[in-house]
Image 1 (tube, rainbow, N blue to C red):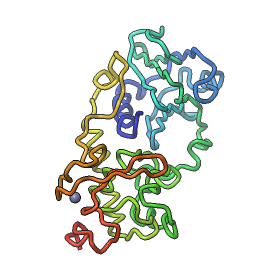
Image 2 (image 1 turned 30 degrees about the vertical axis):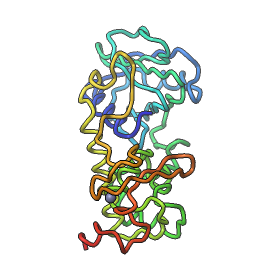
Image 3 (image 1 turned 45 degrees about the horizontal axis):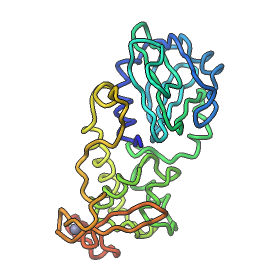
Length: 284
Ligand SMILES: [Zn+2]
């Protein structure tokens, strides 16, 4: 499933291709994907409009034009490929777009959990209105997060994976960030201290950044013609490592199932009480 790093890589790859260029053509090959595609609106609002920004909020990509933005979401299996023609070249191509004279982008999504929508200039949209801050935005800071977590009894891992609290952190990145921060995934979000929030946020950002850095720098690098998408080959420390020795202390990595998702952590480096955390003592 495309995660935040893949979407950020896509954003960076799209920038030189579409920025300051008009959207010269749009074609849709089905009425809906996950949601109905507002074809008439997109055609009216996007056609011949100059793309002035390519923004990412969590896993949503926004191609901004003066009147609003076309929102793309890749869902479970979606991707954008670069082509030399408007005509679809492969199965499950649901839309094709032309920018300027030579750039053709194809939206391909076999499982159809993705979407193509229109967001007005106000930025108001039911999919975006309740989203928490993006981890890289200035709104995501230790004060705000600690405040949002006040009185929250859910485990910290559930909290950081809840897009209404902070958006775009999937299971792998949640496990890895908590490991690097030395925070037990089961601890109550409301009891995470300010210094721990500072550390956790910096670990979330560095984990995502490393993954973005591991991705391709051009659309062709990552969105291969074979159509295979997947997680970047990032070096994982705990995810999927049950029973293997912890990279910091050699304790076998534990796994537990929470809300149907696997959680991987080190019992020693991520103690269930704050006091025993060596990493935090070192920082203090
Ligand atoms: Zn350990």
